[in-house]
Image (cartoon, rainbow, N blue to C red; front, top):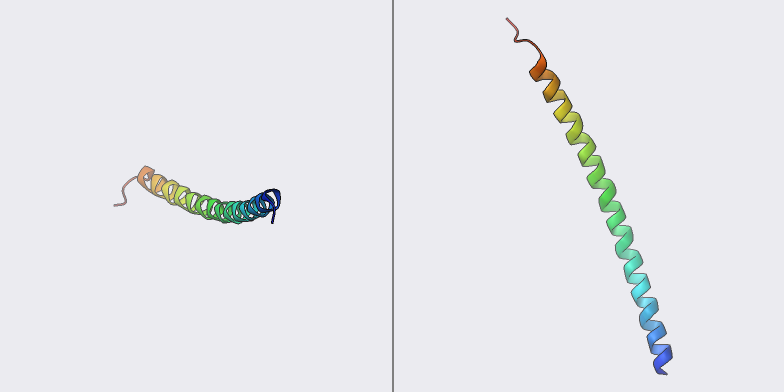
Length: 56
């Protein structure tokens, strides 16, 4: 193989690897976003409970 062909193969492999990594990161970002939404809902519920007058 020529140097140009080898570089093309290396470049293609790099693009494939980076694309796969980007997809994994995108999935992880989605999961983290869902966790943050759930945490925010819990914090809102706790905050609302703390604002309630004590029951007798």
